[in-house]
Length: 188
Image (cartoon, rainbow, N blue to C red; front, side, top):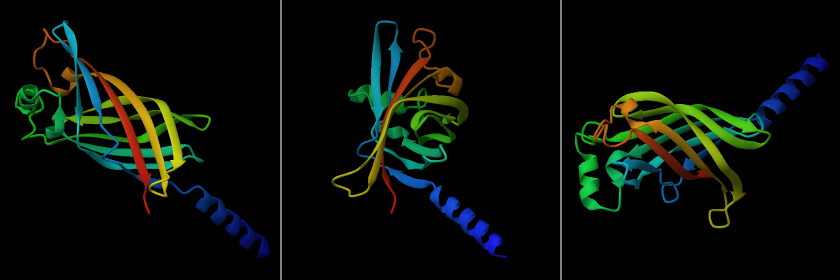
């Protein structure tokens, strides 16, 4: 009986030490940005100004989940005429598809370092796998928030045409480079 109690206690202790923490994405420090071809002449850059979501991570178990929602109408090229056009039916069609989302349940670690995220991007009602390469990851006790904050820089490349964003093809190449700087604050 004592042996069973000891085993149960050890199992309970190990289970509680490997509990995943939840972090809320800080919308004032998270702006997915992108680069896309402009007729081979130049590279247009833009970002989305409104992002929300959560990160759940257990660094000891090297597991995690990511759930990000981007408000498509927050697209910002720094040029209002282009912003308005991008929100229209022939590009992001924000009336019909108000959000872009990314969901993942597979984090990749090398040692203690997060190096990748495997997930699915949903845009214009189409969901496809998109892998993120994480080239920077760090968690600190934030001096202002008095809570742990984790940040990362992630990049991905995909073809917008795979999601039905075909505007300007073939004059505009379909490849898009996505860069996301993200900071998330540990939930209470």
